[in-house]
Length: 72
Image (cartoon, rainbow, N blue to C red; front, side, top):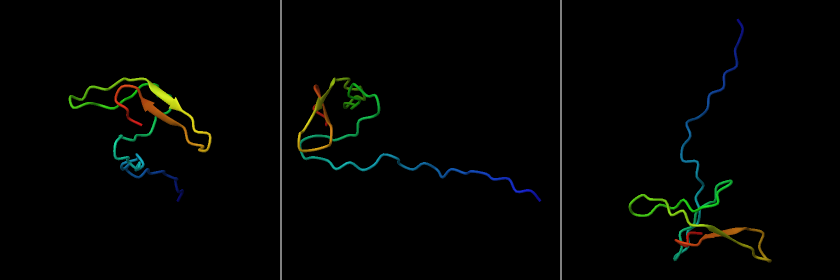
């Protein structure tokens, strides 16, 4: 008998990693190529604010902050 190799993918659970939150700001991960904020308000409408890029000399991380809703 010939055996055929099959690949079965496990069902994708929640693939978003847990991001530590700050007390006064909502913290999210930036998607590749993302230039505008995708945070939704109470009505479900996306913010759409421009993401400002912040550099820190002592840290290797890049931070982005929404001009409108202040999401990090």
